[in-house]
Length: 160
Image (cartoon, rainbow, N blue to C red; front, side, top):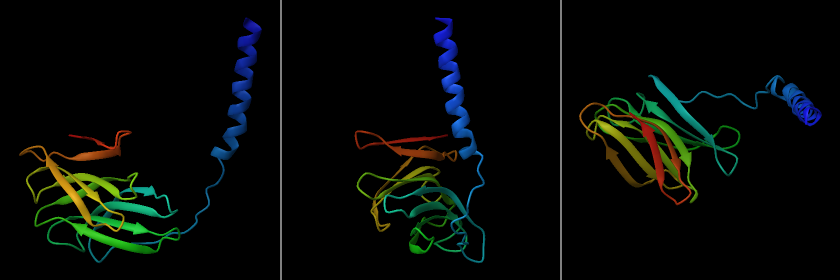
């Protein structure tokens, strides 16, 4: 029994050593780009999309309707902008999380000061058009920091 445990530990250790050099390898930069305008803009979430591109969400002072607005960019595999959109009103609106959904669209979560003071969840189609949006919370600036699609096609949101 002791020999079996020692052998198992040795195998696990050897597998770990085989993986470590890859984990410690110097990362290679595929491309680096700057996005935004002349004011403060921030990317808060990024995910690789099924087409090899990227979906990015955050907030922008440079574009949009008022104070900070939710800013979503769809990038191709080389970082070129396929589309970018802003969402929001005259208050402070920001996205903290974005995920691609099983239908090829996107789910975005963050917070809004334009439509109450609460969590703001937007479902976008693959071109960034709003399919639906919901606000949750109350008067004290509730925010969503993470959103995921669930296996039953719903969504789970975390925040405070």
